[in-house]
Image (cartoon, rainbow, N blue to C red; front, side, top):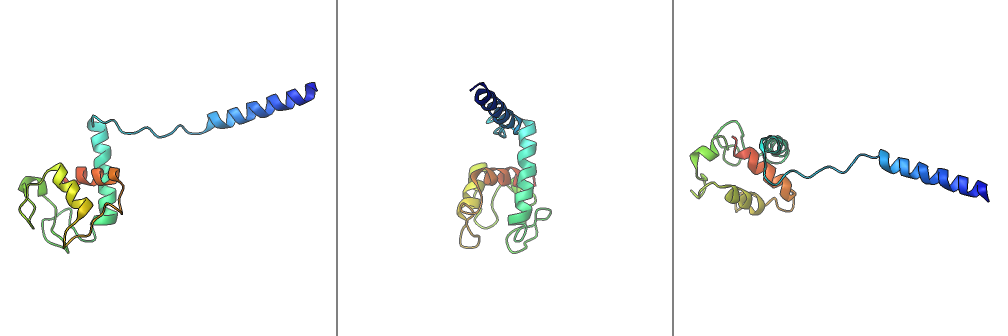
Length: 124
């Protein structure tokens, strides 16, 4: 009987040790968006942009590729296709819903990825 308790105790310690040895869950970025999280968002956004957006848009030029070049978009202040004001919300809406010339990405990208792309595009 004591042997069964000993085996049960050792098994419990082994499982507990394995659980504690696992990596902790990734923490979510702070909602306040400090400079470290902003820089991280821009870096993640650049990565997503290069994989999903660069096929049609130049990031380092305002010259049209398939879609308009995005360099200086925030400084221009308006979208070239409709002259609407460039804001965080308008960029998000445009990326999510697209238009007749651009496909929507709300089914392709996670909301956090869209936020990251917006953060990146605003730095161009």
